Image 1 (cartoon, rainbow, N blue to C red):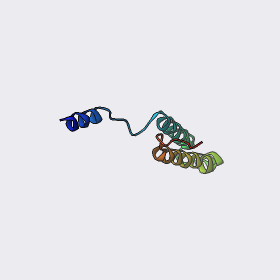
Image 2 (cartoon, rainbow, N blue to C red):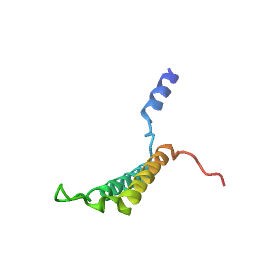
Image 3 (cartoon, helix red, strand yellow):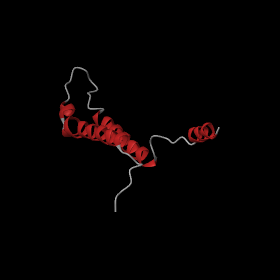
Image 4 (tube, rainbow, N blue to C red):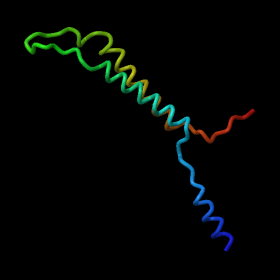
Length: 89
């Protein structure tokens, strides 16, 4: 009878997989991705017959995709981060 009771107590003490630190890194990664996509937007011309060279500037070609990739890397780190691991002294 005590084994059943202990099993029920163990089930009621469920923990989340991710902790506060994981979510913090996830939100930081999402912010990097969002900023990257915002920087990628725009650069078009008002007149469709006129070509605009603004789509090839540094911000849209280098900076924005780099921020998106950094954000994805942070997301992977946030998922793989183990908050239950204790540091050795």
